[in-house]
Length: 113
Image (cartoon, rainbow, N blue to C red; front, side, top):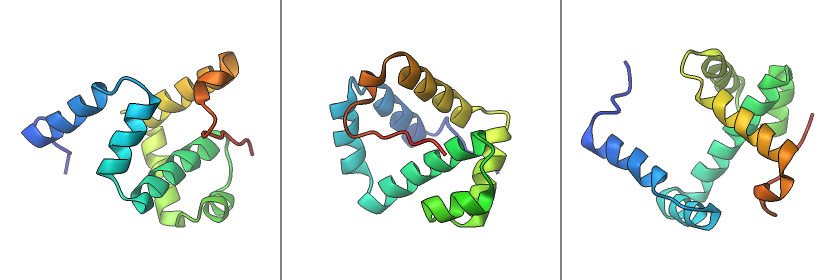
């Protein structure tokens, strides 16, 4: 079943993210919206996508992130899929990291495997 982005609540959610102006606003919004566990889970999924893009083995990713192999496999499928959301963000993070590391801020750590 395809997610419907045209439902009012889903459109409002996307628009609310687009209205955020900086890191501080984004952190405040995400912290109000999500639990600490949800934030951690999303961060782990992004890290898994980054590791997958570097051809890291599923088992190593599971051990590093604590994600199940099923979740890692699902992330791999999405990473290779036609929508390209993970690839887009990973490319942009890579560009920021390589061209202007200060934009990452003090709290974000991009580790390399």
